Amino acid sequence: MEVLRPQLIRIGGRVYRKNPIQEQTYQHEDEDDDCYQGLVECAEESCEAYEVVQTPQGFRCTVKAPSLLYKHIVGKRGDTRKKLEVETKTSISIPKPGQEGEIVITGQHRSGVISARTRIDVLLLTFRRKQPFTHFLAFFLNEAEVQERFLKFQEEVLEKCSMDHGVDSSIFQNPKKLHLTIGMLVLLSEQEIQQTCEMLQQCKEEFIDDISGGKPLEVEVAGIEYMNDDPGMVDVLYAKVRMKDGSNRLQELVDRVLERFQASGLIVKEWNSVKLHATVMNTLFRKDPNAEGRYNLYTTDGKYIFKERESFDGRNILKVSMKQSELETFGMCPKIREDNKWFSF
Image 1: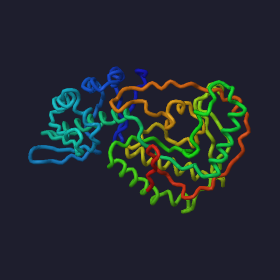
Image 2: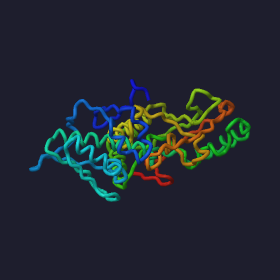
Image 3: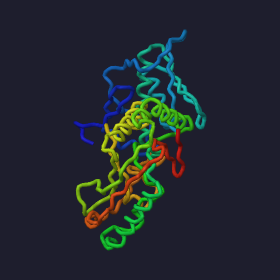
Image 4: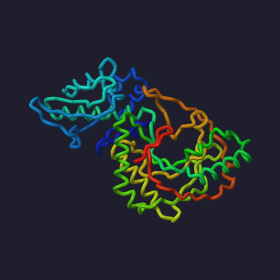
């Protein structure tokens, strides 16, 4: 991370800069108490996005968070919470481990309560990013015709290119899992899963039906492309997707869904637009058949996982003729996937 280009964290429409000096302290749970120091720089603590209630004793604000993240607010031996309370002159009540509830912040001064809330939000977002992805938002692309054509493509590649470096059957997508990813999610409680399902339903009612005209979207899956710059060292090979009628409706739909989920905080904002693609080969599949893009970079306790990837030579594969296939989708709408389970609205 460059000093002049630090990582930015967006919370409630505001942008915070994370101090890169302490970046290495996020790797282990035992160092949670240290990571608070210098975590965020904020020139203005007041924030209208927070609901602060005045009480006879002062001011009060609540934070909803999954119980899995409580330990990062408490810190080792309670040091992180103590430091927060001292610096913001507040009292912070956190539910016991394993119990769902709200974090309650109370204090004599409104500015102190808001300051504590801001810093807790940054901590929660930071450690949520350290969790492995649990779900992803996607379209089905596993109609029988598409699966059949995909298997023919796989058979042809293995027949003609199996001698090329890194090419073997383990890096092909499972035909039953062909899909278009909209975004990756970290859902840490049943409440967050329910919230996601409700948001999908809202998207359907507010704009998905309007964009699709209330009819199934008909798309073409045609041609392949690779993610990096060197066709001789490829990690991801994907099929290109476009609307059969030549319109931009599918791109508009997925971008609006992404925007809605980014605004809610359920998907971390990294891109302004979805790159529509259907992964057909991925070197992460060698060790993890369920891998999905940037997958499981951290364990649940915040330790980084180094995934060694062996790239493959895709030059001859790109020369293999991939026949154009058409997919007539039936009820093609976004869904959430957890392992082999799909949650639809």
